[in-house]
Length: 204
Image 1 (cartoon, rainbow, N blue to C red):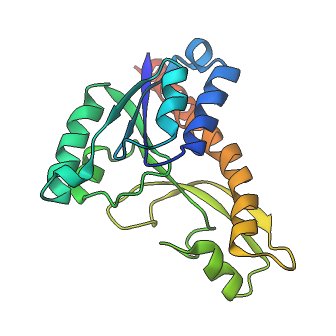
Image 2 (image 1 turned 180 degrees about the vertical axis):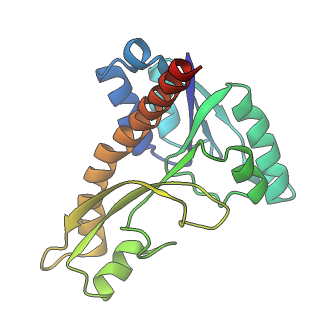
């Protein structure tokens, strides 16, 4: 069985979308894949209750208890590794990860960002898109690298910017697409891995 570990800091709506897709599409039987654990840096993260109700292991690791980002990330990696993850998914995990953590999971660490990267990396993406007069906005799933929001793009979805949009209304429209493309990107990660393995096995 291949394991997914999801990191959250809040409500975890993208985590929930992935879990629901895994249930609906029967990833365990068809892909040999499961969401093994959900970890949060905040004890009050609403997504923890959702995961617990689904029988998914959860843990809380408060970053405030550590002297440095590197110390926190080292302990976080230790806890994540206890689930032998094939993929680590950031789903609203509001921490900038240290290069050591990113390197440890290189090639198996995904993030979702609410803009059409490379446009508008960082924060306040919807406000910045509106200020720039964009006619379209969107969302990007990308591999995580040590440089913020510049990793290889995996999936994107485009939404129109409507007359009278605010940052909040645009964010809500983008969020509906986040819930579509993030599960698809996670599923695709394992489907591509299975194809590569089949090719290697055939060639051997």
